[in-house]
Amino acid sequence: MATSMFLVVLVIFLMGLSAKGQGGLKTGFYASSCPKAEAIVRSTVETHFNRDPTIAAGLLRLHFHDCFVQGCDGSILITDTSAEKVAPPNLGLRGFEAIDDAKTQLETLCPGVVSCADIVALAARDSVDLSNGPSWSVPTGRRDGRISSTAETSNLPSPLDPISIQRQKFAARGLNDHDLVTLAGAHTIGQSDCLFFRYRLYNFTTTGNADPSINQVFLGQLQALCPQNDDGSKRVALDKDSQTKFDISYFKNIKDGNGVLESDQRLWEDATTRGIVQNYAGNVRGLLGLRFDIEFPKAMIKMSSIEVKTGTQGEIRKLCSKFN
Image 1 (cartoon, rainbow, N blue to C red):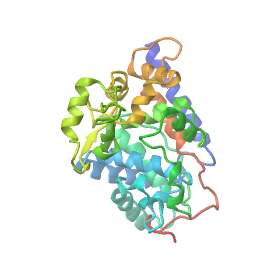
Image 2 (cartoon, rainbow, N blue to C red):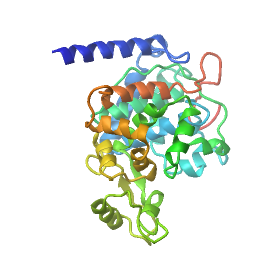
Image 3 (cartoon, rainbow, N blue to C red):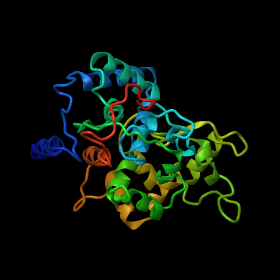
Image 4 (cartoon, one colour):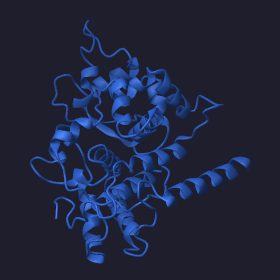
């Protein structure tokens, strides 16, 4: 009973925080101007999810990649030869069709009102919820940016980044170690091409062996999925135990040496990030006592407020793929 009451109070507290707004945003921003906005985004995401549940990971990653370059302004959606979308770190992004679908419906109902940046943020939340994860109130009111450049995508975290570089890139966006580990937990529904981690499986060390941090049983499974000489295009789940369910098994995998990406497994090698992983994996009680399903929404609200454009900044695009 006490635990239930604590959770109720905490949820009300979080809702109060988001209602006050983050960086000029506020929950219910479209309550008067386009009351059905969030319901339309939700139904659109659900339609695409029912066809292909893996689209959830794509939409979540789309929001992350948007926010880390130029802030959360929909710049990742621009289709152009020099835009973010065509930069190497973004070539595997998915979910654009769901965003465009929602935008088309919203432009018919409320032309020039709902930004593409907000659609991306709402779709990310809905994707987590549809994957049996937590839901949260998304502060809205973002406007779409007018800049999208491949040159700025070096800011994006890479699967090859050691903890020191991951920490640096997150700190540059106002995010701390706790946010880093919590947001990495999105990989519980993620996938990766073999191309981005196969180097760990063969000739990783100077003596020609695989990355020693990989569990030996799991190493054999990965090598079977990703042969040394294939084209590397096969997609592999980042959470081997429940790839379509938003849960804590991703953290248990890291603890057991079953992290697919090097950047994920390295979270176990740093004392600070290891403690957070242990906590989420369910092995630490006491001072931390943090729950992933409660902390993830908080980290998402924080991330989705990075360098947002509000008020008269930017624009509201008519098409998400091109500037007005």
